[in-house]
Length: 112
Length: 116
Image (cartoon, rainbow over all chains, first blue to last red; front, side, top):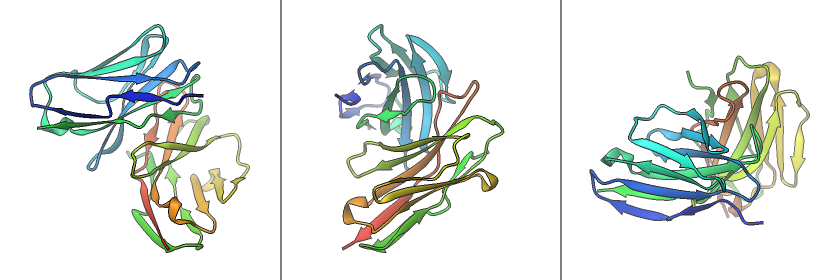
């Protein structure tokens, strides 16, 4: 059974640019969540999608957005990148509410 | 307010020693879920266990064991006879039922270093 797949694994972007990250959940999982991990703030929740609907959102500015497609794949977008957006972005999938949440390997974003 | 506290920032042990990682949580919900994850240097968060608030039974899986005590709001994790491959950052997390139940609140993590 394939795990959670995140692409790309590494990204380098310039301040002001925008970026799109992709997450393919485990087959059969309908919930996809996104987290940002930084040395200073640790692991922070960004948002969660279920059946193409955003059910919960963390305390991040509107520059952070996401969506989920009918096949449960999800994308997150960050516009007008700032240096502080440099982080490891992790995606997790689960079958449903509060189920076992499995994470992908993450996308490491560096903003220069 | 921080919902999950992992007081130990770093733990260093010699191989074959036991390691216990502390996790204290805070919630007003009566239904909630507790998790432990391992993050090796590769970066992926590896799921270890999920426990719901109604199940206080301790669990053992190989060299891993978990002690859940609602009375002290703690969910501690023990690695028995540690091995070098256990070196990683370990995170405890909480998911509350209700409007926030699709969100994991993580502790700051405990870095475990096992020396040969």
